[in-house]
Image: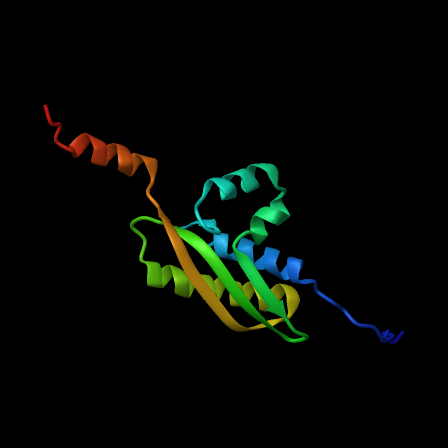
Length: 132
């Protein structure tokens, strides 16, 4: 039996694409969080669902076959920032193509903050000479 083609249009909403971009960016080693570091972000993460968390710090413009992406993120201290940005671009482009079929025309990465791991802060605090 031959496969019947059914006409119709598939629309992938911007929010869906933004969620995919956010999840893909978080898969990259050295990415601490999406969006700018702030109390507001922390509250949003605690109160929002997974989909909203994934879209935080992500803006997309979606066409029929291409997408333009802006990602704002924080990195972990000690990781090479240009390498993280390159890895984020590769991962996001790959995920968009495999999940949605969209080609990433442009992926802009804005590194807005750096996160220092708690262990490192403790170590620095112990090494600092005390003034008496």
